Image (cartoon, rainbow, N blue to C red):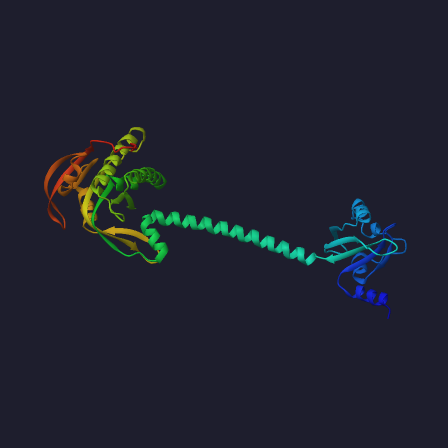
Amino acid sequence: MSILAINEQLLRAIGVGVAVVRASDLEFVFHNGPFAEWFGTPEEGNTLKDILPSLDPKELEDVKQSGLRYSVELQIKPKRRTLIFAVTVSLANGLSDQVLIVECQNITRIRELESMIDSYSTMVERNTRELEREKERVERLLLNLMPRAVYEEFKTFGVVTPQLFQQVSVVMLDFVGFTDFAAKTDPTVTLSELNDIFTAFDRIVEQFGCERIKTIGDAYLAVSGMPDPTPDHATAVAHCAVRFLRYLERRNESHPHKWQARIGLGMGAAVGSVVGIQKYVYDVFGPAVNIASRLQVFANPMNIVAPEEMKFALIDEFQVSDLGAVEIKGMGEMDLINVTSGLSMPQGSRLL
């Protein structure tokens, strides 16, 4: 078998479509089986442009003149499926007659895989963004349920260690006549009113470095001194209490529903921890909470009652008056004070 015959047999066997055309008129000299299978068998007199009309004539002329390779991707649709080919045209050197070698490789599967990878990458990016948004929503929700320091511990370890805080202060507020109001008023109106007021309270609490713990119906509970110790915890909750009442007074001037509140302050020890396994709630309990809860019952509408032990912490910034000794359920006799107003505004604070 001659070298030419061997070369021709090899060309017919490989999976790359190969054709040889004369450079002068682009008529076919040779083509292998894959080329004919993909583009059809060239008839006598057919040129490369007849079989592959998408090839650029200027690029082909540059190949003949300069010897540079011309590479392009072509699409054909022999049946229902579109096929993609990488076509390279090059000039053969060392021959008496100039010929162009046309190599065609079916890259359809490669492009399909690339498209699949791009689609998968897009889907992964979209899912990642959705997961990040969901993570942010969960984080915001948990930060509404617990202080940030507690959330960080919960996120890191999956549990929250109960902590005893020896000195904290608590502010407890509830509204006068709320039960009757809720029974006689459209629930959406009641909820809208509470949302509006409690949102303002949250801003006040944040302004004075306190932590809103929870609301129970019309009751609002916030603390200072936990989970991060605060030396001026007593004045912080007192400032909150005074601003709560000032906010309600101003709101009542322009709203049809007039709200009045009783506020109790407490100081002492408290325990803080996440309660629950499936439904997480950060809660505080202990003497400071019990005192605030009991004393708000003794307060007149739009007044603040605190234990006498808070007097020395508050007297420099607030007007206080003695209420005398009162029997407190479960606590015995306790001397109380009435905190009527603040004497000064902390630097940089804003009255709501």
